[in-house]
Image (cartoon, rainbow, N blue to C red):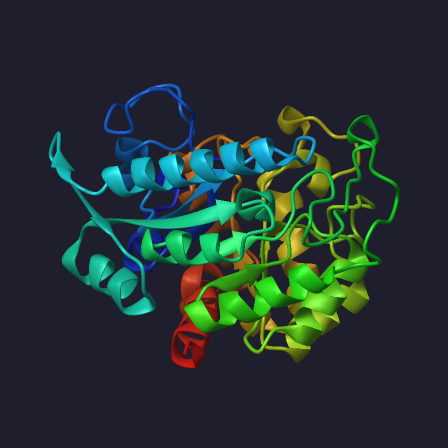
Length: 342
């Protein structure tokens, strides 16, 4: 699918404020983001693909929980957030801006610059020290994903790690510390990301957060039975608290056991269609998980982002609906958490 074959779709795409809510970065070293290289998201590709803003995540892998490993996880996340902030500069003809509020993201679109939005993936990054959340917020992190693969001190994961000694269920959802972390994130103005959490954790997070929770990179379980995907009750819970599911580009979440080269833009759009029918256009968005496992035929990197707009236009989504999917709904949640911060 070649977006350049549909000039109208390409024009619509470039007119939109487009926000990808989950992009990984290489760590500790990797290709320069200002060079058009092997990364699925570098800044030249981002510009070419008409992506206004990206949530770049400081990802911390789950390991055995000890005081030393928790400190190392925090230091890694802190270092990654500093590196993400460091992307915000003018170089190689590209203007890149740090954007840590909904207004700043919208201003980046108006000014024709690229926006970098920091975030944290895996609450293991704070260990058991809630004070570390304030440091992440100070560095601009706009959300934290509560778990990753494997349980942590905050909550149960959708994918327990037997090799780390995980039982199927450890906290029966959230731990008391996890509930306290949610309250602190609400106070700091950080969104609670329920991607990677167990079903029980996700429903409890939706219930206990004073602000809408989001799933920054998940798909629909009714279409692909994967523990990382959200079932109908979870989708309904997101809707009921004003949250958003950001449908993601991981092939195994889109079609069971499928490889990326066997998955298409149409498969991706099917998940968006289902979620829109189930919970409404106001609660669905777009994400890639690029450089963290996401891609498929037709959206192999950020430069091909217009292909998503083209397929959705073909299915009858108008410009207003596309604006909600491509960032408007996420910005609404971000504004809510900003307004409710202490």
